Length: 507
Image (cartoon, rainbow, N blue to C red; front, top):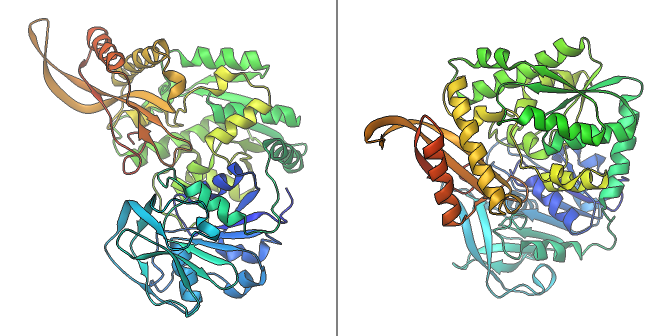
């Protein structure tokens, strides 16, 4: 899409940065992410948002911005957290460094109900994640909101510059979307965003990028790679779709994947590499090492299967990119290495051999794209499944016996969710294995077996997640069936951790 009158989001490294892009799209406007170093490439934006970030403005090499270029755009600018602190410095103020972090909910109290806070409650919950705070202010800076302690958490400077010390993009900020919308209303003209437009842009980009080369598309049966394969088919490029059975899949998943692709008219080649993966993972218990082994072996299997492939296509989404902090210009901290962001993939990217048309999208946007491509709702509605598969649901060293235990527990849990009508109400659910044995009693005899953890979460984007309060009867029956039917389990636990601080998966 043309980079004119769009919302330019400058990424200073926050784990939530892409959420800002997504929220702007939800509000109906086109947004694009940029590195601060690339400010001269923005073109003619309609508005600019400076994201938060993990660094302190007091650090000698803290991320900076070309303020003169920013002012030359002549459009509304919003600084979020780090972005607000940076703007305060640029306007001649100062920032007080602190080692004490404010993290979690806080109360927003607007002192002015114009501009950003028109229609906002007198007290509204917002989500904080920062340590430093603004101190000295520009003489024309206006405090337009405070927290419950009277500390300034929102500022306005001359020239339609705004700052907020909280994250409006996360759902924990109850009126955050309204605040973002109020900011965008300050812009005179913004380019609209529609998924059909985005689809056309991606198809044109794929055709231009691929040309006559053959694309190898790795498919897993998940929503991301499925939509990618159908998108490549729609683009009319030469494609070989390869499904690798890595021995880390759920119960009966190989057959289900084959059936689904047959329904969509996409031919896939199945490669059984389960022995190869399990052998490579034997004795490995470090989660990062396991992820890297799986990612590198995926590439080897693909290359062994297709020879000297000209291009590799992946269903990478933005959370994969941001959590891996794999962009060379990324200011983000590494949360975990995703299997599709390992060194080999990054090498192939340098060679121009990796195609990732979905890398700017979130899961729900991919589902919307899939629906526009005619993919059936039951396929699009499948729960997310991690690339490393059951390896990240089985902390510690892997072996077939422990993986089979997880498969059986998971099948029972998912079956109960479907039976009770809860499968489509949750974002993701699974059973994992806790690497601890506990004492129990089975058949009047002592047992010493593993514990399984059940996890069900709701989320919009996988960046944050809340645990689901499932019906007690559903959990009771799931536990009873697992304990009666799965050899090796004598204890069932339900995970009630949110993300953050816990991740959705165990590793």
